[in-house]
Image (cartoon, rainbow, N blue to C red; front, side):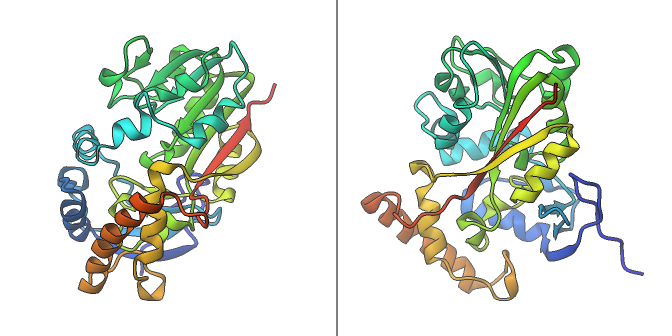
Length: 311
């Protein structure tokens, strides 16, 4: 008898469709070749991952194996993305969008805050950041704790007017647990704001793109999946909004346009045509990105959930 499909990490319902299996050995080589990062320790003990689609529209890998601290420190140092994503000079449309939902003087919790750059977008707020990996790299003057949302909720229930998680939920093995922790931290009437990678999008259109695989991205999101997350966390979803492409990610637009697409709806395929196609897309896309910047035809690749705690 075939194994039963795994359950959706949001709703608990059985997965509706197997999208494709992916060899863990293949992913380890992909990370080493494309990003010069050792994903082996984070993927240890797994022979094969399976990418599934749940009834709510969430795509998720089984098993859910997130990267450890060593993986993320090595990856961000190699890519130089920590400062671009969350450093003091980071400019992200999603931060501007999140700030519009934060009233002056509000208490704000920023979950998975990285360099705490959201604080600059909410200057009138009382800001607290959480980041178990990068808390020790927080800028001077920023309050950042090496805690998870679930742990923080145990001593700060109802303490915040807004709880924000930007590009964070896709990295964790239990996004519902994180959302429930954020909800517990909110006062009645408080707002939860979360941005995640959208599926389908330019990001998921690039074949053999390690960023979209364990141990980095464990989930790909849709409007329905975000609304299901809010509901299961005890919140009322108000909106799911497309996030405009920020300049720091415009390279992805060019790569998605240039890379060859695998047959059969697959996202990962072990063939030289697609390995070389990924290298070509990166090299040519980098040149186009430097010369032309964000293309006018770029479409949003991230979604933002806005949900409110009843009361």
